[in-house]
Length: 273
Ligand SMILES: Cc1cc2nc3c(=O)[nH]c(=O)nc-3n(C[C@H](O)[C@H](O)[C@H](O)COP(=O)(O)OP(=O)(O)OC[C@H]3O[C@@H](n4cnc5c(N)ncnc54)[C@H](O)[C@@H]3O)c2cc1C
Image: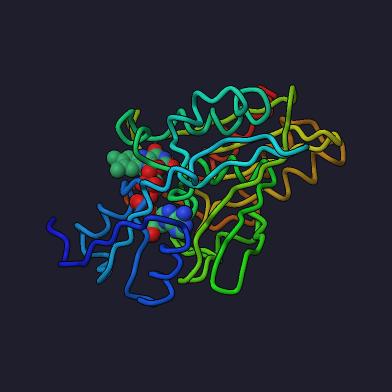
């Protein structure tokens, strides 16, 4: 449980962080809250030669309203998302998901940018960002680009972010006054989800449903969404929750059990909207 040696650099600005990423190539990792990266380093699953600490770039920690969108800085902690009044009013699904992450220590240090960039298939905030049609803004040497959340997660702990890019903003469609639900099943109160569901009613009348723990990435439950849009009752639509999913079959839960959980949790989420 002791990480390999590394050089520590504290970034004084976003520009410096980007320069460090460009200079060190694949041998560098950004450090935000450290609550996923440091455990991985202790297990020697990752062994970066250089750690660039962005944790003190306060300009990356904010929640703002921008027209119809809520924009969130990547260094915003899970704890802030739980409590922020703009989040509570316009994207309460995000607060509901943040509230279910780990324990207070994790929520005080962990950041939304770190959680999304880490791209764990069971990450709670990923489900909420997917259901809120989030756009992730990446900044790299050639400028800024928008990545829709639906295209961001590419595999187990891999994302569309390039090695020299920084996630600099998360943009979410406001869902003011609309129904939402976050359901999570875990073995112990503080654990990661075995399966989780984020459901969000959309202004145009459709319902977005996102799943975690049901594949190599967080994903949208497309068949459920289509059935609901076609007028299929929620109780029937939820039976389609596991369609097209390839959940892990491991010591935590069998694939069949996860599929069953997905149906039950989607049913509960839709009933709560
Ligand atoms: C005991 C424990 C329980 C947990 N339980 C849960 C849980 O129930 N649900 C859940 O969803 N999560 C859980 N987590 C994970 C937690 O949410 C982490 O905080 C989160 O996954 C990573 O955020 P971080 O700020 O700590 O990122 P870090 O650990 O600092 O970084 C994670 C990765 O993201 C990269 N990164 C960070 N910021 C950026 C950025 N702005 N741009 C590009 N790359 C970036 C880093 O280089 C690194 O590769 C748990 C963690 C612990 C230790």
